[in-house]
Each structure stands twice: as C-alpha cells, then as structure tokens.
Image (cartoon, rainbow, N blue to C red; front, side, top):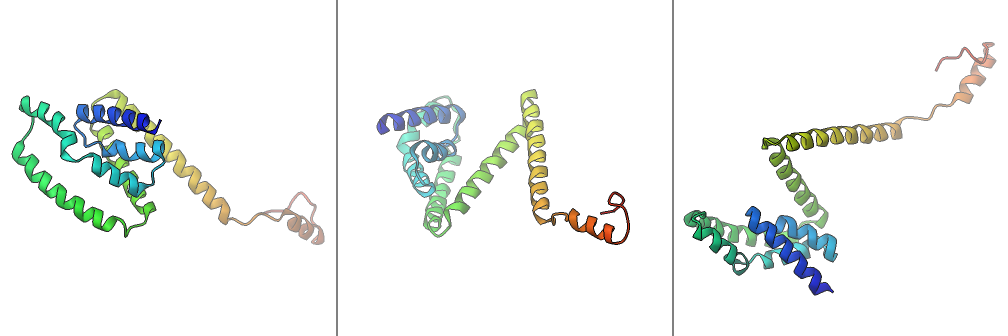
Length: 175
C-alpha cells in the first residue's frame, strides 16, 4: 500500500512539475509530511534524492527539443544549486525543525502572495481580497484574545458594597 501511495505522489507531482516547470520540492515536501508522516528533515532529504538529474532529464529533453531551455543558464544554475544544496544540507541538522518548517511555510506564503498580486485574473484579485480580509479578521481576533488575557476581571461586588457604605444607591455607581 505504501508503494502505491508513493507512486501516486510521484506521478501527480511529476505531472504538475513538468507542466509548471517547478522542481517539485514545493509540493513533494508537504506531501511526504502529510501523507507519509515523514518529519521535515526526512522529507527534505527524500525530496533532494528524488530531484537528482535522471528524474528531470526526460522532461527537460522535451523542453530542449522545443528550444525552450537556455543551456548555459541551466549549467551555471545547476553548479551553484549543487553548491548551495551541499551548504544547506550541511547546516540543516543544526537548525531546529520548527524553524525549518516556519521558513518553508513563510517562503510558500510569499511565493503565493507574489503570484496572486501580479496576476491579471479577476479570480486572483478576488482571492487576494478574501485573503486580506481573512488575515485582517484573524489579526483582530488574535489581538482581542491577547488583550482580554491581560485585563483584570471587574469586581462589581466591591463597587456595590463601596457605594452602599457611602450612602449611594446601588444603581448610581460608576466603574
């Protein structure tokens, strides 16, 4: 059953990656975490192992045949990417998993926001508006909950007793 799940994940993300021209890690890491219950470092390492050149080579060949690849740029980026991957992998185990997850999530939110903001689609503009409204409400509710936590609870009994001792009626006290 696990092999079937892995095949479905690979086929789905491979098709999306080939169509959109993305590396697949953006989708593969969350899929491995949510569907296969991997922890973040294992999902990241597995994703890097999947993205070894033979996997992307057939799709790249189709793009190359259509003259849609800048070979020189691809070589320079690949060399720098390999160096960056080595550096990143060497420091990843020193960083807390929660920090890695947070950075990954923030990066995905930034990318999503950039795509929505620069799109000319009415749907994208509507999604941006809905997202902004939801973010505003979430911020409001969060601040309201935090604010209530720090306010002292009113002691109305004390106010009523004080007003009765001073000879005032129980209904004209001020808080």
